[in-house]
Image (cartoon, rainbow, N blue to C red):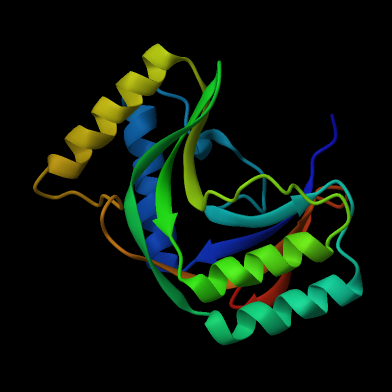
Length: 181
């Protein structure tokens, strides 16, 4: 199974650190999080579109034109979401304005072989969880959110400040719009 090329929205440095702190909460509870990923380009992000085919220059130009006027973009985290079937992903669910949803739909419609399932904007916290471990993750994140010195993201806005292209073949990222290093 090959990894897909992806257009990803990245967070401003403060919110990036806040998501990483949520990964650490899960790790401290003995739950494998995305904090274990050690790839040099790995960071918290929100996937806009993906395809096994690399985006051509025309698509990357379009992506820049669509997203540049929107960034930086302040979005609300509306709560936690469980995605998947037998193995679950736990993520912060993100509400995006209509202009961002239209930009995403436009990119998917023009990218050959793009994943055209309904878009559920989210920032992933942990993947491949059993239902039991997902329940433990929810409990850990709920306890963290209730704490007096919490760095919790749930319910707090996030600032998306760049769009990048993840190229799995080169294992590299390229800025497309905004501050996406």
